[in-house]
Amino acid sequence: MTWAIPSAAASAVIGIAAKREHRGRMSIMLKETRNKFRRLDALLQAPASRVRRLPLNRCYAILSDVHLGNGGPADNFHRNEQPLVHALRHYRKQGYYLILLGDIEELWQFDLDKIRARYGATVYKQLRAFPRRRLYRVFGNHDYDWEAPLDPARPARRNHLGQAVEALKLGRHILLAHGHQADPHESRGHWWYRRLAVRLFKIIEPLVVRLFGFQNESAAQSQRPRDYERKLYQWAKANQTMLICGHTHRAIFASLSYAERLHMEIAKLEEQMNATADKKLLADLAEQLAALQEKLEREKQRKGIIVPVETAGKALPAYFNSGCALYNDGLTNLEIAEGKIRLVKWHRAGHAAIAPEVYQEGDLKEFLKEATGRNIPRAAFLQPRREPLHRKIHRISKAFATH
Image (cartoon, rainbow, N blue to C red; front, side, top):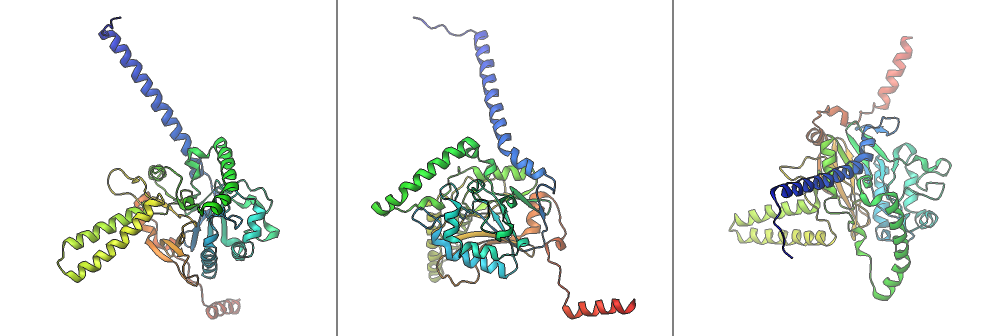
């Protein structure tokens, strides 16, 4: 058989068909991308009657991805119980408002009754101690299907699960959501399949632990694609808003991961080492460098390396992630107070610690200006000063005297 060389007309037809096929694929991809973010679009555009708006001038602690279990071998949180209890007690005493940003319970693996029985006297006790107006719950993909009628994080007489919401706003330009809304694996069909797989693994995990001494070190590892943060960042950037999420188990501050910041610190140390001949200083810098490289290696092992969110130029501070409570040595969360936003870590060692380690801190007003283009007055971030009691009494007495 001989093969004929296509004529110019045939080549043109083939080219047109290829272009149509390419346009079709691009159209499907664009549609899928739009569908992924349709839920976030709806939450961002929702009126205040649907997505509650909280003021900026309060102190907030934002915590996600605790994944409370039953305390058994398959419960990946239980090692960090004491750090979480200390953190909750600290924030309550300091007058913080607590935002639970989803996946507080691991309801894919465990029944709520068993979770409540295990942590009722510790974690839930601290949550119930918060005044009702100072605790907000946003549901995630692992805790939105609660089967029990009561939320153990709230007083029993006012406990309906309908109090959990899908999103909150701080001011007009900060959206808080769990972050699973843009995850293609979290469709209803995928969700039931994955939950079944997780339940089956829960059954065999204790046996594996007993036989082989295996621990689920992947609990703190992110199962999300390495470019997932880029997608969320690009959405926030396109909508000129600041997005605060959980879901990925990767702590992100001002659109930069912990690993990226370690790389920056390592590069800075290497520059300092190249610029000096002082042996003592070189030894000190080498010790610091080794410690940072060790931290970076651990971050690689737990899949904390992400695709940079910005492909050209400096990333805008448009995306933040609270991390999780499943790390081997503690838990991370975000704080917002007095115009500052912080990424902090509560370490498992030294349970008596009264304050967390501050990983990163920045000016929320300036971050919002960069991310959204809005110059919000500084006064909007500051708590109103309380009037001293003696002045209040004097003012009221004077008002009565004039009448």
